[in-house]
Structure formats: C-alpha cells, structure tokens
Figure 1 (cartoon, helix red, strand yellow):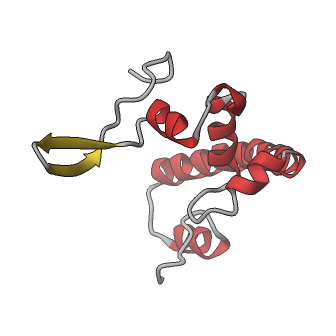
Figure 2 (tube, one colour):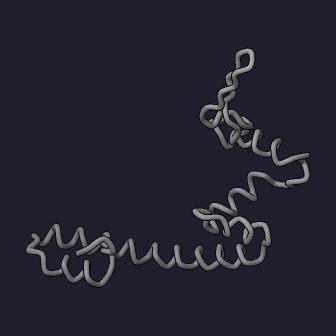
Length: 126
C-alpha cells in the first residue's frame, strides 16, 4: 500500500472490511475503530487549539522556523525556559539545557566530546 499508507484511512478501513474475520474479531475491530473515531474528535480539537496558541506567541513562531521544530515542541521549549531574561547569555541557556559539549583537556590539548546532557535537574527530568 506504499509508505504513505494510513492504517485508519478509508483505504485501510475498506481492506479491513473485506478481511474474512470471525464475528468476534470483526466486533473487536469495529469497537476499536469506534474508539479511534471518538478520540480523533478530541485530537482535532486539541490540534486546533494548539495551532491557535502557536500563532499567538511570537517565540513559538520563531522556534518553528527551525528545522524539526513543530508547534508542540516549540511550545514545550517556551514553557520549559520560561522567562528567557533569567539567562544572561546564550551560553548559560545552553548549559542549563544540557546542550554543551563535554570538554577534556590536558596541557595544550582540548577535545570536545558529545553533548553533556547535564543541564538543570528540575522536576521535568529524572
């Protein structure tokens, strides 16, 4: 069915309908599809609220300009950072987030390693 195949699309549902399933299995599939349909209403409502909130916040709009950052990720970043003015520099923010490289040095040799991941140990991290 290809890489763009959506398991809950009309194509997949038609495929599921034609499968030779026992009545109990058919009932189980129908019940799960009902749950998916009910949840989709909630998901669509939350997606719309998220999109509206993302448009209203210029910080979120700036972050979503970065590759790989969508509205939800941007809003989480904004919520985690809080008031950015509490960081005197970008370096302090990167250090707080644990995005600084490990540094190993000896005499005149300095080696930069992987990201340290040793940022703030607040309640969001365990």
